[in-house]
Amino acid sequence: MLDLQDVSYQYRGKFALDGITLRIEQGGAVAFIGPNGSGKSTLFKLMNGLLFPSRGRYRFDSEEITEDKLKDVAFSRRFHQRIGFVFQNPDTQLFCSSVQEEIAFGPHQMGLAESDVNRRVEDCLELLQIKKLRGEHPWNLSGGEKKRVAIAAVLAMNPDVLVLDEPMNGIDPKGKAFLRELLLRLHASGKTIVAATHDFAYVEGIFRRAVVLTEDHRLVRDDEAERVMSDSVFLKQHNIM
Ligand SMILES: Nc1ncnc2c1ncn2[C@@H]1O[C@H](COP(=O)(O)OP(=O)(O)OP(=O)(O)O)[C@@H](O)[C@H]1O
Ligand SMILES: [Mg+2]
Image 1 (cartoon, rainbow, N blue to C red):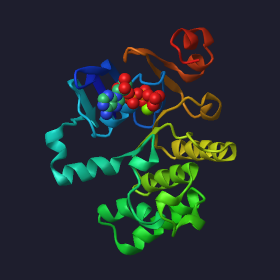
Image 2 (cartoon, rainbow, N blue to C red; image 1 turned 180 degrees about the vertical axis):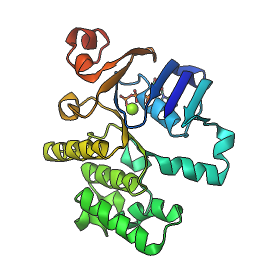
Image 3 (cartoon, rainbow, N blue to C red; image 1 turned 90 degrees about the horizontal axis):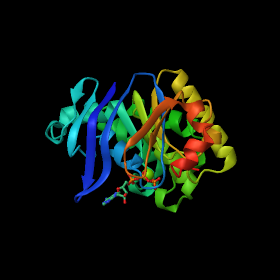
């Protein structure tokens, strides 16, 4: 479903991704691991059409994703409805003046009827247990609350693929356990899940596969998640642990 062929990305001449080749099948659950600055967020922005390869090719559902194609409003809408992105920092994602509007934004953009939009908003408020925050301004929420709202806003689009950049960041232990259950449920319902994480304990059991990026922005291992996460020699060698 996601297919990257020899993808590199440079920020003003400096590599952030170097020759990444990988495929993610529909219904897959893949964890991305790597030290700070290895390129996980850059890779996710690329998967979501916010950045484009400096070299190589990215295909989503067999269709190459390019800047030109995403200028087409209809194409861009379809693409962004199918793949949802929860940013590492929710402040970059949230821009509406209330939680409720934030969650309604995507479904409105999709052109859904008002009653369907409202139903999705209610479902997502319920799903993330944030009903009591509906009228709040996202700026005034705590870090963990913002993260929940950001996840709810993405789920409201009902995307096939969920890309989550450090979803457990800033979430308290009870919230992490809850989020873990939610991701398991979403995966069981057929969603493809891609996430960057440092939180091995909480993501255990969600991911079959782990992809490891190194400090020099290359893909060094693509393997069963359990095997990677229990390989402390390897993790230490690459400054992950
Ligand atoms: N907007 C930017 N401009 C220039 N360089 C950037 C920019 N964003 C990221 N970089 C650089 O690209 C590299 C990869 O960054 P990226 O944010 O993708 O890493 P990451 O693996 O997500 O790290 P973390 O674990 O800290 O979230 C780093 O060297 C970083 O300094
Ligand atoms: Mg990051």
